[in-house]
Amino acid sequence: MSGNKPNTTKSIFTHAGVYLSLFLFLLPFLWMLLASFKTQVQILDTSKLFEITANFSNYISVFNKYSFLSFIWNSFIVGVGATVFGLILGLPAAYSIARYKQEGLGLLILVARIVPGISFLIPWFIIFSKLHLIDTYTSLILSHMLVTMPFIIWVMIPFFEGLPHELEESARVDGCSIPSAFVRVMLPISGPGIVTSSILAFIFSWNNFMFSLILAGDNTKTLPIAVFNFISYSEINWGGLMAASVIITAPVLILALFAQKYIIAGLTGGSVKG
Amino acid sequence: MTNWIDRNIKWVFTMPAVIFVALMMVAPVGYTFWLSFHEWSMSNITPPLWVAFQNYLNLFQDELFINSLKLMFYFTIVAVTVETVLGVGLAILMNQNIVGKGLVKTLFLLPMVATPVAVGLIWVLIYEPNIGIANVFLEKIGLPGQEWLTSQNLVMPSLIFIDVWEWTPMIALIVLAGLVSLPKDPYEAAMIDGANTWQSFTKITLPLLKPTLYSAVLLRMIDALKTFDIIYATTQGGPGTSSQTINIYGYVLGFQYFKIGQASALLMVFFIIVLSISIFTILLRKRAGVNL
Image 1: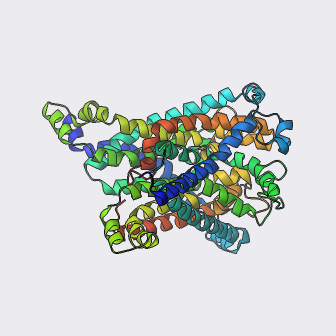
Image 2: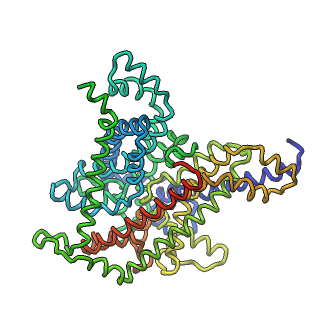
Image 3: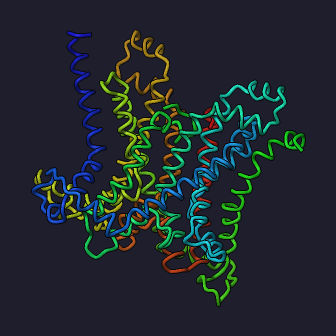
């Protein structure tokens, strides 16, 4: 190819286009990171927009003054809880829907993904208040499960469809019941699918704002609510806000790197391979 | 016992999930439906009062509701259109031999997985009239700074811009996956017939890409109609009600004014709109010969 003029020029333009777009899409993250290391005075001075500083005071105050450690813990507990219970309910359902072609149920799960979350927010609030479950992990996990479980089922149906069911049959010939064949034979070979759907389900729970806005309280406040509360102060502490944003997005970005191969497949329910 | 389980395995395996969805989703939507015929302020002393269709009648005379419907459609149509056009363009660029393509694809995932509330707040700083990079940039190139999120005219375009930033990469990556799997033969045939790049794009690429584009647009549309986090975190529907989409208005009615009946009626209408648009598009897609 070398020496082929038009192709070289085209290639340079393509590379410039791709990397310039990438830079523009990453700019807000870069901006967040830079601002998180600046003092309020430095942020207010627009002549030093891209100055790089290494001042950790925002991070220290986010942990000390705003007790972010407890919010991280709350988000973590709710995310893990919603993912684990989502798997327990979702995996057998996905397997059965895939294996026995229960298309009607598959459709119900799709509808659960389509329905706007806000249409059951008022009843949830009323019912959970009556049961004294507002501001508890229980109500938060239950609500987040409505995000994680349909998602896990949605991702796992095409995955299970791709597995050879001779495996299950040979385990049954050896005397296993279907549930034990499922747990001992089918689940172990589904590792990659389970790991990916769990990572994404956890990210969805971690990112969830609307449900926590209603159901979380002082004891169970999750990170998105804590970060959001930053702008209710009269003068916004921009550095602190950006440090808090870094803290909330960093784990998600790292998890996403692990699941990167499957994110697009996951978001499109396996209909598109990423 | 084991035999019974094995014989009824498809119900044993699915029932827990189905019961969960019934309890957490179907029953609450039913409750919302029931509430939509009542007037109630969530008070323990005064029980819900039956008002028949009054809440729905009020709704269609409520200018804020009509306004919120318009804003929802405006947001969805503009955002999804721009994302699709830019996404296809970006996918075509990325479908060349790019050095470090794997890394580029990974980094493009970041906007869509980052926590939406944090994303919203980063953009609040970017749009900040005095210290935000948006105005600093405008002033550098000699244009006047703008009140992005606090001006009635600019707030919706500014919010749409955030959505475009967040979701264009998703469309691009889905379309790229579609492009990679396209057959090579039609292009070779077209080249022999003397077709130019534009012709082979419109006559071959686009038709072959239709199923992929359908999936991407459908998914994006369903979520765009329901956008909440970004708007609530940045403007909470303001200034005034200039960015109060139906989702935000429902939240405000229910949880700030405690007009439970009125909010429930609005949420039922919203529920029906989102569901019927989605089902309609899925059916269209089925007719176009694409499976879910």
